[in-house]
Image (cartoon, rainbow, N blue to C red):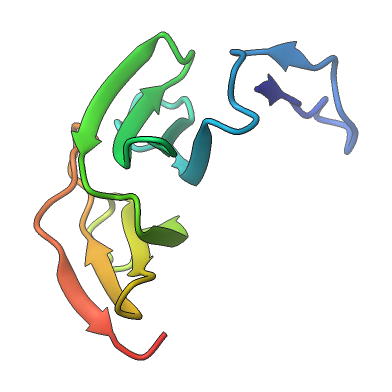
Length: 119
């Protein structure tokens, strides 16, 4: 996994390697400042187990935030419910149901709410 930082002039500075082993092991669910420390954080699903982890960059800070995410596809990470914290929007591929997982100040996700069907 590489970080390609901007150079504040519309270009890119030198890339920085953050971690290895991401090519087939993980699916990214979204990147945002989830824990409120002014650095990007990332939700990623371990493909083989369906475990959803939060990576507080640099990626040496990892927290498991959920299990059973194997059948889900991410639609994005945004403040959907307008409470100032990034939320996960994800579809259960087996049912076509779309859920909102509200974010919290510590990066954990609150109980999901169904927001759409037939997707």
